[in-house]
Image 1 (tube, rainbow, N blue to C red):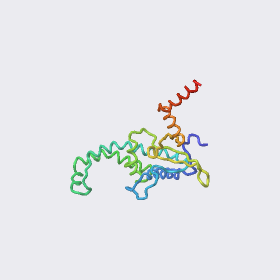
Image 2 (image 1 turned 45 degrees about the vertical axis):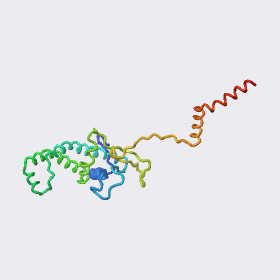
Image 3 (image 1 turned 180 degrees about the vertical axis):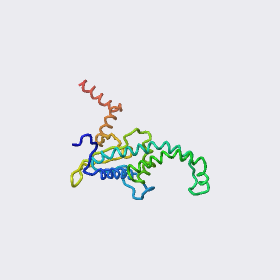
Image 4 (image 1 turned 60 degrees about the vertical axis):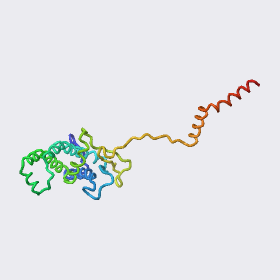
Length: 218
């Protein structure tokens, strides 16, 4: 019996299951890489395809990492006030390194460093953590939660017919609802134009009235 046991085992040991979730979360963040990080950028960023049960289990880990990165952005903005644009190792940088500005920058930057270490501990990939803090977290500053969505696919997985699903980041591949316009055919357009012309022109109505008068006199 699995009383009060939360989550799915997915047919794996605890260590194997933990490694699986780390790899899935890192893979989702790595899809956001561009030419800045890698020349082999994915075609559809912010999306991975996996089984439905794996997507449901890894989703809390992904959203937890995004929340950690988002909360550290305020400290990163504060640290920029005390940062320097000098090249590392130059005389100007060494002078800034010994000044009080560096201490203020270090104290303001400390929560960001702790957050990055925590995310690396959760997903085990430094490159994915870098992309998360530099690219993804900025999108969800004003969003209180719900950073991902799960879309079930109609076609099952080959081999074992497992239910497949898409796990993607909200705001990257959003669907836009469009109203389909009714197609207009040439015959309908011509008939509408003729009816409007008859209703508007008084010359077309005059012969009809004279014919009616002639018929009444006869």
